[in-house]
Image (cartoon, rainbow, N blue to C red; front, side):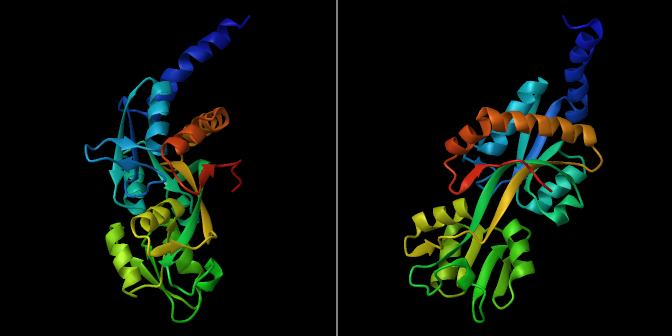
Length: 257
């Protein structure tokens, strides 16, 4: 039979964790609003997808209400967490970002690919890094950071914001750029909308999605990592990814950083 001390600890654990993770009494979260691997916003403003599902489940366990804010960029999510405007954010892991916020363990892993014209001579990702090729990626997103650091011969066109699919298609079909690099979900959606484009078959990189908190909050991370371990193991994350109909996204394995 549990001791009185153990029962007391268990009784106090939830209120203490709630006060730490949601000090306002509302769990506030942010994510990149134009990244379908995190979430989508419908015309009525309703947020769906893995980020929304995880926030909703975390808030349920903490017994608090929640607010989830779609923001325009990874930089905006970083700022919202660092400035204390939200309690948690959703971002793909990067070393540079980890110098500004603390990352939880991963909950999903995503392939990133190139979209090209249907008649392009580029067949695989390795073909892209050559002289005369221009690659577009959205500034500050994981793919752009990776390409900025790794492309040797191709030229990188860093787009200031995520353009609509029609604009991306116009850039490719008009020859302004020869490839666009982004997560597979986004590129597959582009090609479905514009069938004269195609996606190269192999990933040029993989990214992992995680939850971020302000620096120096070890207890927050410990709780979030336990939470994520439970929802990964239970099938919660897999079911969320399935409902979102994401392409090239899977449940993350054990995190090693």
